[in-house]
Image (cartoon, rainbow, N blue to C red; front, side, top):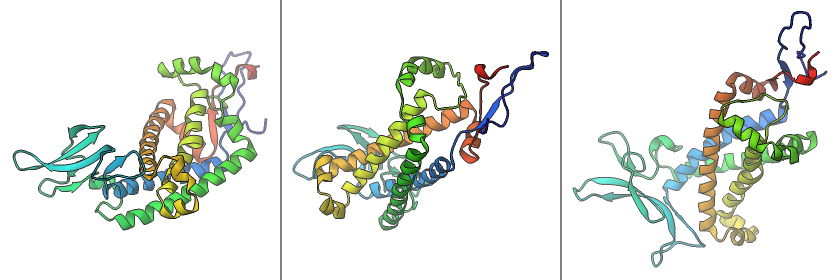
Length: 287
C-alpha cells in the first residue's frame, strides 16, 4: 500500500495488538495554504482592530448619522460621576463598564482612550495608515491563497473528499457528537463529519464572506461592483458583518486549538507539517 508506512497487522501466534498505521493525509497544497492562512489571519485580526479603533462603532444600514441611531455596538470612554474616566462597551443599547480592557486602558498612570488596548493592535500605538497598509497586504495574500487552495483542492479531490459532507457523514453526526462530548477521538483516514462541517463553514462561507464584505467597504470597489453594496444592505452593514465574521473566526481558532490539544497535538501538528498522520488500526486490515 503506497501511502502506508506501517501496516496494522496482528501476530496470530502471539496475539500482539495491531501496530498503528501512518498515512500521508495532507497534501503539500493543504499544508502550505494552512500556514499562510495562519499568518494572514494573525495580522488581519490585529490590524483590523487598529482600523476599528479609528471609529469604534458598528451600524446597520447604508450610513450613520447624528439624527438617528442605528448603532448596534460601540466602545467609548466617558467621565464618571467622580470625575475619572471609564471605558464603556454598548451592545444593542446595553452599556457595560469595561475600564482597563475596552474604551480606556493602559499601564497605571499611562491610561489612554482606546477602543481596543495597545496589546491587541498592530501597531500597538494608534497608527491608522500603517494598520491599513498591513491589513490590505495580508488581505490580498489571503485572497490569493484561497484561490490556490480552491484550485488544488478541486483537482486533487480534497474539496469533495474532506470538506463537503456526504450522506453517510450526516447520518454519523449524532454518533460523532456523542463521541466528542465524551472526549473520545478516533484517528481515521479521513475527516469526521464535525471536522467537515466546521472546515466547510470556514472555507466555503466565512472566508468568502469576510473577503466580500471587506471589498464592499472599499470606495473603489463600490464603483466597480456597485451590486456589492446592495447585496449586503449598505457599507455600514457590510462593516458590521465583517466584524462579526472576524469574531466567529476567532471563536473557530480557539475551538480548533483546544481540539488539537485534546486529540493529540503531536500527531495533528505532524500532519500539517510533514503530511504524515497516525490513524487507529483498521479492523479490516487485521490478519
